Length: 155
Image (cartoon, rainbow, N blue to C red; front, side):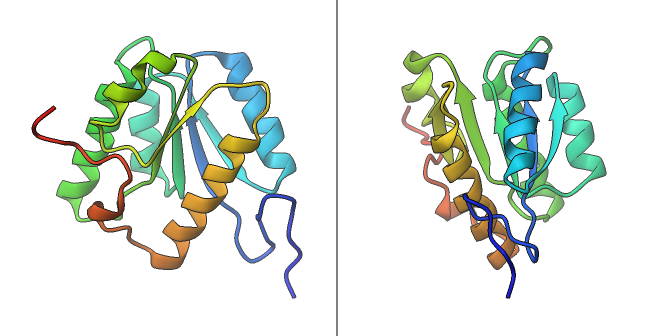
C-alpha cells in the first residue's frame, strides 16, 4: 500500500507543481515546504519562464502570483487557459497566490480554480494544491466548466 505524506502526496502519485513568483525567496520557501510533502516543484520567476516550462513539461497544478516583472499575473492566467484550450491539451488547474486581497473580486473573472492569500502558514495553499492536483490526475482532463472562478462576460 502506498505511503502518504501529511497532505496527500503518495509513492504512486507525486503532484507536479509550477510556482510562478518573481520573489526568489518565496519560490525557495515554497519549494522546500512542498518537496518536504513529496511534491515535485519547478519555479518560474516571470511569465515568459512560466509559459516555457508549461510548454516543456506536464504539471498537475500552477501556483501564480499576480505581480510579475514581465506580465500581469491575470494576463498570464488568461494566456495559460487560452493556450491549453486551443491546443486540445488538458486544462491546467491554476491557483492565484497573492498578498493583495483586494484583487480577489478581479481574480474571480479569470479562469483560475482557486485564490489563496500569501501567508507564512502554507496549509491552505498546500491543501488546494493537493485537492486540485489529485482531481487533475484522476480525471486526466478537467472540463472547463469545473473551474470555480469562470470568466464571466458581464464583469
